[in-house]
Every structure is written in C-alpha cells, then in structure tokens.
Length: 154
Image 1 (cartoon, rainbow, N blue to C red):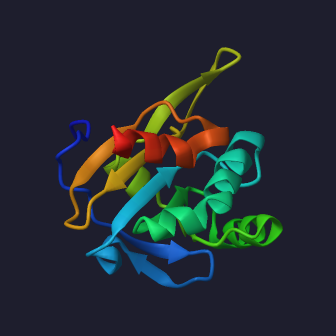
Image 2 (image 1 turned 30 degrees about the vertical axis):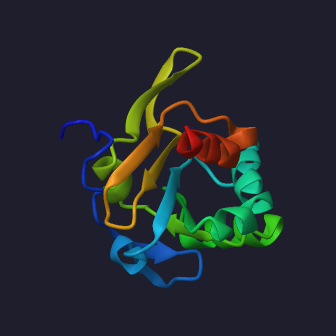
C-alpha cells in the first residue's frame, strides 16, 4: 500500500474502544477528528502525549475536534490507562493491527541494534468529510495538541 498523503481519503475502520464498544470512523462523519497513533499505554512518551490531549481536550472540543487514540494494546490495557490518567477521549484497541497497517504506521523499528515491528507515533487530522487534512510525522509528545492547533492556524 502506498503511503497516505494529505488530501487522501482516511481509511475506514471498525474496532473496540476501552469499554468494549464498537467504534467506526464513520461514527464521526460531520466532525473533525484528531486520530493519533501511539506505541504503548502507560509508557513515558505515550503518557505525556495522552495527558497533553487530556489537558487541552475542552479547547479542542470547542474548536470542533474529536480526539481518538489508537494503539495495538488490548481493551483492558486501554481501560487501565484511561482510568489512571482520567483520559476523556476514546482509545481504540487494534490488536489485529489492521488500523495501524491501513494508516501505514506499523513499521520496522530499531532499538539498541534490535529490529522489531511497532507503531510509529503519528497524528492524522481528518476533516468532516473523511479526508486527511494534515499529517504530523514528528509528534512532540508534551505539546501534541498545540502542534495540531499551530498546524491548522498556518
């Protein structure tokens, strides 16, 4: 599959959230969506990113955004993460890796010379009509929501 670009249709998905509810991208038609991919629940960078979205959630909602986080962790892990940090938004469990693959964020990584597959940290801003408006390739975990706002204000 070719790499997604701004202007492409966002790949549709259906998966379970942290509460076991079925969530589909189509559920958010008519809303602007911040779809952010992160490697693992309750790790330092992922916690910083989630908490930044949490701390700015009301402001993002007032600007018309829905925030959705996606990782390959299971629903139980997501539930613990949400409860521990009082995250007010949906976390989607992609244990089958179908969403991370569709969005091109399931990549080979290299840590200390060891290669493995994992989720790239990347954020997609999807317009009301399901089109990718912006892609943030280099996410600043402690200012991820501000990155979104700055990008859209350019």
